[in-house]
Image 1 (tube, helix red, strand yellow):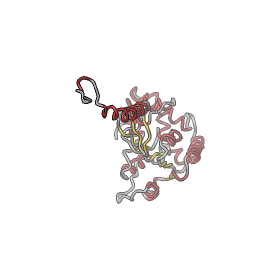
Image 2 (image 1 turned 135 degrees about the horizontal axis):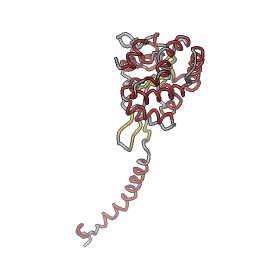
Image 3 (image 1 turned 90 degrees about the vertical axis):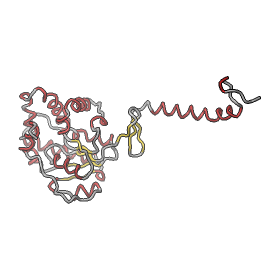
Image 4 (image 1 turned 45 degrees about the vertical axis):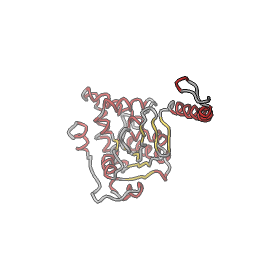
Length: 264
């Protein structure tokens, strides 16, 4: 008889034929799966599939290359209103220093973990992001960039009376703020704004940064934009409807100091 009990470990001839056909494919599929899992994540269309956590990673849709004090906080609020958020901003670093500061320090040393940095976000503006526009253009090739800007002279005056002043006096800041301030100094230095510059030097460095962004990012992937121009330019560029609500205008110098001090 060809039929034998399975408990005896003997396989019927028909089963042997089936196994001889299926087994090689099974082994090959297993090998591919093991090989894929040796990667942290693999691109599939516009998505990244993370094989370590078995979760799908959504890349950033919008990246701001404009530095702080160019309307980045207003633009963050605008992006959220357009349904393209949550949008990462330096405020998120300030509110989550134990996690965010070490990640950005690692990025400054050439070891970025963008997935961890931007976890839960679909867009990012302001510093620290603006200091990594080259790296991010490689990491997120499908993203659209927005270079927020304003008059170089007005920017230099505003920056010198807010962010630059804060960093210059960091030795007087509370202990719990020191690591964040150290990271911020590193990012801003990387962007081309070392300490000790006067308004003329800041103006020159600001123009150089904007020119570097324009040289690095293809024109068809970038909007050069002033927030005073409202909804129409970003909505047209990003392909979204213009909201009925007014464009958000916020974060003047007083609001900046309130936000840094924790009053907002």
